[in-house]
Amino acid sequence: MVLFAIFVAEIEANLNFQPMTHKYSKIYGLIGFPLTHSFSQNYFNQKFEAEGIDACYLNFEIADIGELMEILSEYPNLGGLNVTIPYKEQVIPYLDELDEDAAKIGAVNVIKFIPTKMGVKLKGYNSDVIGFCDSLRPMLKPIQRSALVLGTGGAAKAIAQGLKNLGITPTFVSRTKRDGMLTYDELTAKVMGENLIIVNTTPLGMYPHVDECPEIPYELLTENHLCYDLLYNPDVTLFMKKAEEHGAEVKNGLEMLLLQAFAGWNIWNEK
Image (spheres, rainbow, N blue to C red):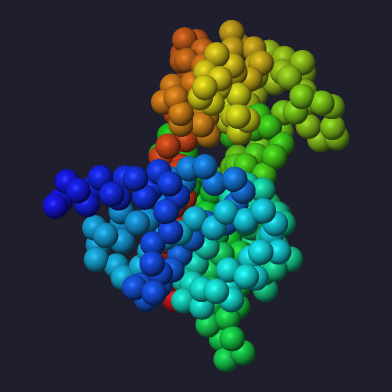
């Protein structure tokens, strides 16, 4: 029976199965589109089962952010939501309040439901900042005070805010020329020598395109550089491999993923 239960659970997970929610006192979930797979759903449901928490975590694949209101109406016992692409920015007008970091970044990936006398208040947070800071902090050296952030999307903005929170000056690197940013062609020996932290927030190198990587001058990296890739599949991206070949310290984004999920749970449950 145990093996059969495990088999059924695996099938349900692969089919993006939504369990019978009336059995649970609290519902948590993820909104996004598409949701072909979900780290969060597996992580939280395993956590709930292991810790005996009367809750379940659902994937809400919605084609339009306006469908959020239908979810709120259908699931009055929602305890919290995660938000992923493409709604991290689009969800903001539906919220009552933003955390300081989320407001600075302009992107939300955690929604907390706060009971009030007038009903429920929705407050947005960005746990990516927390996860990144908690992951990077133990690796930092005193000489690493400036960083290059490869990419300019929502993830890049969260990383830049995290770096600022750690007292590190970030500079965005873009493929096209923009005010206040560098292009890859402008990554000179001087720039590379001054910026000893390099964070890849682009999808370059993600499975199955494992033979791709950001076009930075890897030959200018040294043992004083720290190269952090937000990707975690594969475990060692081409960006990390080439950086390590030139003596740089490297790390992938798996720990950050786990830490941001843990931070989201803390946000939902803090009083």
